Length: 481
Image (cartoon, rainbow, N blue to C red; front, side, top):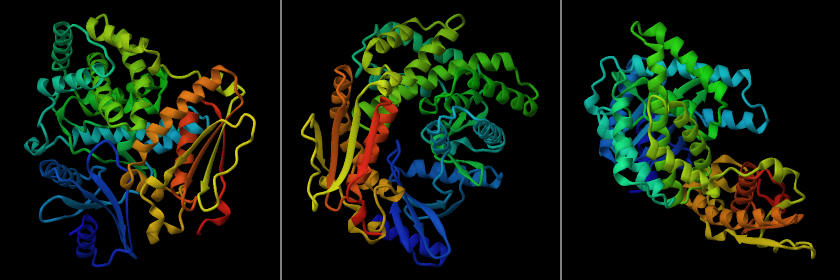
């Protein structure tokens, strides 16, 4: 029996109504798969995960947090074999979406965003402190406590999944000494709180202005600082240093109101140590998910995370010297491929990248004879959402289509190869003051796959280079609507 059939049955048994819509959501860093199911009166998020111990941790944590009225999704139903479950549908808006929208509108950090960060910090403190009360940590997976063993696992994740692929080989004994120094320092911080473990903006949903935490399957007992470091030092959020400092002070003020023994100066020292640990863990994850699995948005976060780590190492050097790690990071940064491109230079350059989607039924658009350079990519190798009734009146501009292509067609991996080719030409053309580069994407109807890929390339080039783009969907007048 298929996952779809089993989730539909679970939904119908719980809500008493047949599903009218079922579609996959875009995958993230984990191997869990999510789907949105709905009927005439109900909606839910269905999950499929073969890792039963991880699922059991999520079930137990969710029941505990729900009983304490903490902001997490309600758990509706679980399949008998515990590989499928239904949870509350909190919508499509993550905190990352809000940050991105405001950044794209050139509003760096308006009052609205600062207020949202404060709401999240308030909710996070409740999750950490109230969530800890009476929690049986034996339910946690894979570990009950963020202890030295778990910290060293993250350090080695950084070593083997990031440094080695980056071809950086520090002295093994010296590097292990730094790992030991860092973990022993962090173990001095009070650690009797619930730790979400991945408290970043993609794991915070916003529903009617209220934040909800998701994906806390890896939660365990630990120090307060780690989750705050995860929130404020997420690479893609790109918070300015002064705003991080302001929000750190806000967190400490709120924590002092809730914890009589709270020591702000000591908390701040350990906080920056946990920022170091989080950055090491992130680089390990970006190395594995990006450099190995070729997921582009992870690769795009490496440069900012390196800058964050280099900055924090300078802040902590006096009381937490880690010379081998610092030298390794300096060596990686010296590799120019991780350095963010000068977007102001690209924006002022004469180059325009002209991106078009098209239908092979109508034929490949003709490029101007002069200069006429560029690429044509055939998207028909990607699984076609247009074959399914739910997607036929949608286009590659719509989120359900994007989610389908990311989940069912491995579109991100396919696009990572496209981006690598186009990036090389963009950098070359910028250096030679060329004026045009043409990139065309085709699929059968010119409505779903080609449109999605064209949009993704335009977004990628804007974020990475700041280069001028012109985007045209040539078959739009023939779309099925």
